[in-house]
Amino acid sequence: MFATRTPLLSLTLLLAGVALSSCSSRDGGGEASCAAVIEYRGHAYWGSGPLKRDPATTGRLVAGVIPACDDSGGQQPEDPAEPVEVAELADVPLDTAFTWNGAVFVRAGRELPAATRPWFHAPLCRRDAEFDLTADWVGVTGQEQPRFDGDLRPPYRLEVHVTQGPEEYVGATVLVHADAATEPGLGPRDVKSSLWEGGRVTARVECVDGRFHALALRVPEGT
Picture: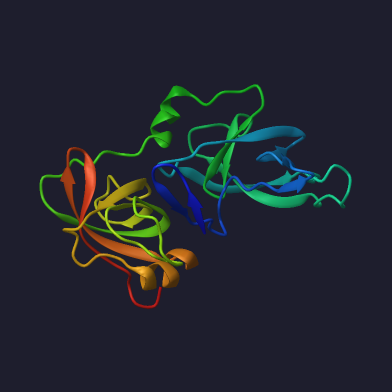
């Protein structure tokens, strides 16, 4: 999915598991949307994010519900309520917050403890030597106006969720910067076969002023 942003072009993938899902409609030029909220034991919990690091969980799942969504002004039937299983956080009680689909939901009137602030800040690149990352694609932003679907030319920035690599980066969502010196780089085929499908990318990376600079990028076969 492509969306224009001035002066950059933002190419954002909406994954099937995106956390803060909402519904929207247009009626006579107006727009309404359903907020990111989950109910648990009769209380509303609001989506808080975006998360940049995966929070630790206890492994316990409890039942919540996404309330019925009616954003059509009464012109169409509302979306029905949806039961969901939400995960208990390791260091935050359920009566304050929980996590679901990659986001943290906080009970109305409550606040997350200060110790959770690192969850919302991506780590800086701080290694002296080159290293490898394997990650899930989240999105990509480039400076060049696309000429066709999947057109991707350097420089561009990949937003990825790291699944393998140095321990301090695993579970983090970071930006990987690619430029004309990145070899090999990624192209339209990779965008269509991997990014649009929520696939993986591998990167050979060096740290430059706290940024993740891609020396090489590849899409693993079969993704």
